[in-house]
Image 1 (cartoon, helix red, strand yellow):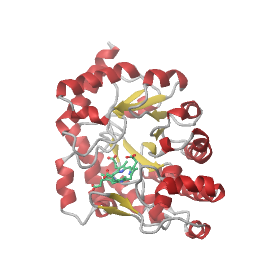
Image 2 (cartoon, rainbow, N blue to C red):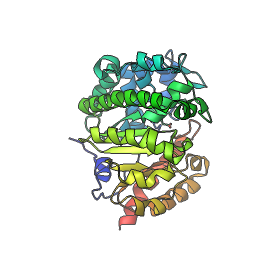
Image 3 (cartoon, helix red, strand yellow):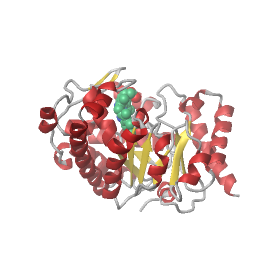
Image 4 (cartoon, helix red, strand yellow):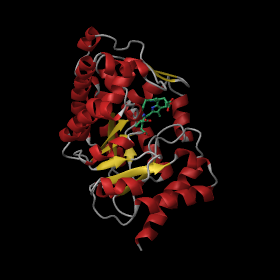
Length: 344
Ligand code: CP3
């Protein structure tokens, strides 16, 4: 039994007495406790692959920030690794795939991963976290959307343009679909296993949605996200596709409960287009660089724009590592107080 189920009620579209709040990337470098633990380890992967440590870091923001949800400490790139394409996390630079997908043979060599066998450490981290949380708040599980995962597998690292990945969509669309089908099958089994292990809500991250033209987005991304949503009927699903403002009408038709908005979108424009879906977001992460009074004002304005119900307060993307945790507290406390006032 959950002691605080605000997030789940908001996601299901039920009335809540205040707006729930959490932050994308809340577990991580904004917290000194995280940096301290991380500094004693060989690297990011040791943290991700050791269930007790991943659970500890998952719970840190619940203790330190009093957020209404925990998100399992992992990464979207564990999926390509489970399929046979290992990643490295290079200090201060980000992810790197020593091998990338270039040919049909490369796609053939990839497997549809078995969650218990190849991603058992994440499932175990979820089980350990659930026990330690003891119902304090819901636990969010997640995966990358197939398009974003393909982008890393083909490109090999972060990129402004992901032009190698985008080139594949033009040069060999059949091969792209072949790869997307394998990623989708892996992701569905993985997310179902996360739910079985105890995840209360699933979020799908399509971080590189915004670089595709609308037709490509429909052909190479939305349809696979739809398959994923259909395969997760038992818990609410949130789709966060960064930069995909052009896809709002399509998202309204997805069998998901919540749509995440980045900070470029205005909820007052989106709300009438998505029926009774819940919206999540969308304070500009850079707004947290302002003074506490400015953070408070910006947060109140965000809450007014979303309205009191069917909103999960969050940033428009992950919190930046050099953000002052005191301002994160101001954001969270303002959501809790002001969203209560909004209902009065
Ligand atoms: O608190 C949480 O949100 C849970 C953990 C989480 C991480 N990555 C941990 C992480 C989640 C949900 C992710 C998702 C993720 N990973 C996405 C989708 C969301 C988004 O930001 O668009 C993407 C694109 C990745 C890939 C990735 N992982 C990149 C590009 C980087 C390097 C950039 C960076 O922030 O350092 C990572 C590394 C990473 N993933 C860190 C953390 C806490 C930092 C690693 C460290 O501690 O050194």
